[in-house]
Length: 298
Image (cartoon, rainbow, N blue to C red; front, side):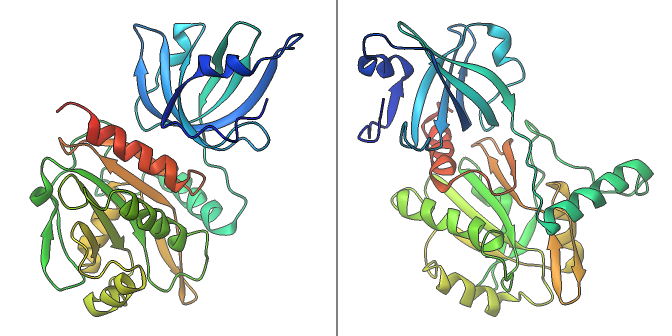
């Protein structure tokens, strides 16, 4: 069964049954997705699925589950591994588990090792408290690419995406990729950016990434003068505090910066919906998550 031509925005998993031929054997397809909605009463889940080569394009799908416990601990914004089970008369999601970002690249491994050491030794009583999923984010103020002071509280009532970068990161799958995700999102929601959606790129290299440097970086992304997309810096102390609140760790390493990868999503109430670690989700999945939040009732 090949679903390469399906382009519907949201598809019920039962739609897959229309292509099941006679003599069909049970199929299992491993998938990686972002949770957009959990309906425990109906034992179903809406997922933004990545492409499964040779089987289906990337798309948003509604899946039933056989057992309600499959939905335990799941909420909007979770990155999950699961199996699409296609039987003769049913299609459902099975084996759902939270996806753990695992990278053999040296930077993420080094940051994870640092985080582990800090957790083991306690890192002192003054360690910045990490904001957890569901927490309201305390207000902070940084400076944007035009040298204006920007406060998080000024975006109350809007969905907010936050990612972290430094302008001279040399690795295409790191800061460049996370910024590119926002670039794709900007194009998809050009009519809603600034009105319903805000994008914040926070530099964790404030000594180098002064407003004039960020202004050029914004121009590189065709974001100069684009309402709703801000590139932020501040004093080293301010930037470090904000980064650490979101679990974003980094340090200088021979002229470069070793760092984690995080993309944080806030709902209209200013609460964290997702803190996506790594770079394994797609720009489409990120956009689908933004759309689900912007469409959700207040």
